[in-house]
Every structure is written in C-alpha cells, then in structure tokens.
Image 1: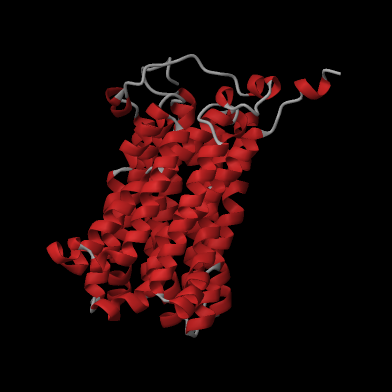
Image 2: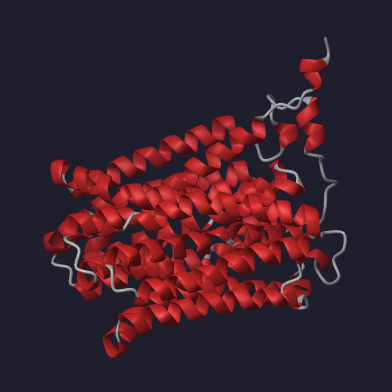
Length: 430
C-alpha cells in the first residue's frame, strides 16, 4: 500500500523539460533579428556597419550581466529570477518591432534606439544560463547534474536550427515586425508556464513526494555573501574561465559566420545554405546532453576531476580536429559534415564545464557559472570580428584553423582544472 507513495516522483524531469523549452525561446529571441535584418535594414536605411553595432549591443549587455544574473539566481531562486527575465526580454523583443516609431528614436535616432533595446534584451537573456545551472543544482543529485545542464543548454541547438526558416516564412507572409511580436508572445507564455509549474527548490513544490525529496536532499542554509577573494585565490576558477573563453570563441564562429561561409565560400545557394546551416545546431542538440551524461558517468567511476576533465578535453580537442578537417577538405558536403561534428563535439564538453562550477561550490553555482560564461562572451566578442579579418588576409582555411587551434588549447587547459578540490578556502560552500 505504501509503495506508490515512497517511489520518488519525477517532478525534476518536468523542471528540466521547462528549462529546455526556455533555452529554445532564448535563442529564438536572440537569432530572429539576423533573419529580419534583411527587411529591417532597407526599411530604416540601416547600413551593414550600423547593423553590426545593433548586433554588438546585445552581446555587450549579455556579457555584462552574466555575473549579476547568476548572483540573483543564487539569492532569489530560479523561479522568481527566470520568470522576471522572461518577462523582461519578451517585452524587449516586442519593443524591437516598434522602437523606430517611439519617443526613444526621436531622442537618439533609430539605430541608437535599436541598440538600446538589444542591449536591454542582452541583459535579460544573460540571466538564463546561470539560472539554469542554479535550477539544475537544486533539482538534480550530484551524479546527474552534467546531464541535467546538458539537456537544458541543448535547447540552444533546437532554437538556433528552427528559428531561421520559421522566422523567414513569417516575415515573407506577415512582415518582419510579426516575427518579434510572435516571439514575444511565446516568451510571455513560457514565463507564465515556468511560474505556474516550477519552484526554486524541490521541498517547495506541492507535487514532489517524500521519495523525491529524499533523493534531492535539502541543503542547510549557507551565507549568501559571495566569496570573491576565495574565487580569486582558486586557480581552477580562472583556468575554467580561460578554457571556456576558448569554447565561446569557437561557438560564435558558428553563430556568426557559418551560414555565410556555406554560401560565399562553399558555393551553396541561399536556400540550401540555410538548410545545411542548421546541421551544426542539430549536432549541438544531440551532443550536449550526451556529453553531460558521459561526464556524470565518468565522474561517478573515476572521480570528479578525472570525469570532468576527460569529457571536457575530449570534446574540445575533437572539436578542433573536426573543424581543421572541415576547413581543409575540398568536398563541400564532407566539409559540412566535419564542421557539424566540430560543433557537436564542442557542445559535448558543455556539461563538464557547467557541472564543474557546481562541483566547486554548490551554494554559489549561479554566480560561478555566470563568471565562467562571461569568459565565453569575451571570446564571443572577439570571434565575429577576427574571423572575417583572418579570412580576408589569409583565407578561410587559416581563419577556421585558428578556431580549431583555440578549441584544442581550451581542451589542453583541462590539465589545470581540478573541480574535485572545491574552492580553496570555503569548504562549507563546496
């Protein structure tokens, strides 16, 4: 009679499913402007350089608010913070479509107004991934956190792959503004769903039974003060940031230039290029959860440091090798295959990185992951500009070869990363 009551409920998988969907929404709202720019630019008389400023404004806001976003998640919990972030960036998404007719455009011009809105959108979306890490840390036992964050972040692949064709179809049939309005409604709906179905901690959720609560043991309260000095004095933190900066550099090559590379360099037409450009993101969708699962299994069998390092190093090094091969192979289809595997292997390493921040300090998982992801966005700020510059002066094989070398460097840095030791002094937080 008591067996059904003691068997753990599975609400943690509901939470993870919601995080995956939020991840998809973040990249819909992030990528849609790259499609709508085709009609936005002539409508407003925006030049290529000015559009680059608008794109960069998002990245600046996104990079600046990683650490504050993670701290907010640690302080207030994933439910409140992620709901607020979804509402914020959904409003900014809708405002993108109407800002040219607003008082703000009259004050700073259309380009300035769009830059401001995209900057604010970046601030909101910066909260997402560190909050995912906070939620996974609270809702999953230690042996499943790599897989959990791998599934959550894997939504990036689906969002990035599906947005261009859907946004283009909506734009052609109903105009580019409709793309932003529909994306905004989707985000608002997702925010409502997250608020209604999620809780920050398992013990707060009415659907979690005693069995699942026992599986997800409640931690005693800890100080909310961030031990910045301890972070500075822990070498693993900074090796982790540096290695993840390498991942960010390579990831932004795909986010910024892969489609144009296929069309301009590999000779695909616009339509086929758009279809094949989704291949790396579909590889991310598959390999990100797989890598998280692998690092958890390795950590359980060989210890945290070895388990994280093998998965992280393998993913980064194989990403570099695959990208180098893709850059050199003459066959366009073999090149796409290799480059897609490069993206997949790159995201295979994701679970090891994000789980390592929790291994270092469960209490400050949001803040630490925000710090690490700031590094990725520093790399991501350099990559979109340096990649075409290198290609212009020395050719695309060299440009992609540099990305491959950076990926391999990021993998080798795992020799210095030791999450099993925790933070240097704050043993109670680790």
